Length: 245
Length: 245
Image (tube, rainbow over all chains, first blue to last red; front, side):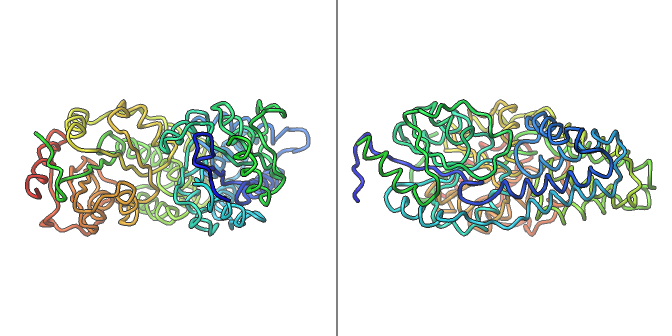
């Protein structure tokens, strides 16, 4: 159980937050359902492709509003106005603002096995939480999750691309091959770290936002490992280290 | 011009971003004017106390939406619906979303003397940018300002209170009395650092958000210095160091 301090040993394990450590996407899905039931007063949801239009507006707005519940709410308001041809009432738009407020205040439910797995890994390797989205909302979720004590370092980033991970590794003064990232999103957590030469541990979540479902990760990537649940994380990271040492 | 490396010498100079390094409040004021001219179609702005109601809704929403242009936009939408008794049209609410988009995309104009002053200070002392608001929007503003090269470290925080500054000082492993913070807001940049025992350099900006205008800083605080313009910053910081060395 000792950590060999050689050049090739693992030097840092990163964890994603939303849908890796705690549930998140469920609340966004519920928000989408509430949104659609408001729109149902004005348009036929079965033939309008509402979800598709919403995703289109969301993506157009990502460059301006960024990720997170506030950007989503502004996108929903804009999509509702467009989709109803400006017929939607102020009262219903106010209900959409309320959807945003509820999403920002949702309870934070830590996923089964996460606390034990992160604690076991933190006992052997340095760990960091690398999470994307609204600074304010992410900080609130970290507090509410009760996991703050496990993470001496937290990085809240606006985009999870290779440059962002490279900057984090530079701050830790660590070569890419000694870094392992654990997350649910192939697009945000795995693909960019594989591109740098780091390791990715993928633990899929039950639901995935359509925007995150698009990725270019091959199933046979040599530095990609699959863990069905958080309970397997310590063992998977140990096996990566054993293979590189 | 050498920096004495004694325990009492200044070890870090922090700079606020909005309205200290670059103009910001002007764009929020313009947004408020555009908002009021939309509301003017529905209510008499002279007797309704619109700005007061907006500030009330903004403060109520700060705890949920946090600071920044996205939270402001959601607050404006909510205030407009409340102030008009739900009479506002979807088209006008869409215009309010556009106000938010414009505010997020405003050009970043660096304040006169800032670049020269920060460069002069960075040549003698370590510097850090400590800025509040939307992560995504603040990162965009730092890039657009052209000042990124002057700041090896950037801290984007969700609230500027004594705990936040204490955390930053802990990361730099620095006692409070060796830290100087430069900013336009007595409430956010000066009061919390004086409470820790650090130094504050106050450079007022022409306009101040009503929320930031409330503070508990006495004019004769021994660790408070006033600098009318950025041009004076290097000299003021040098004088603080000369007095403490």
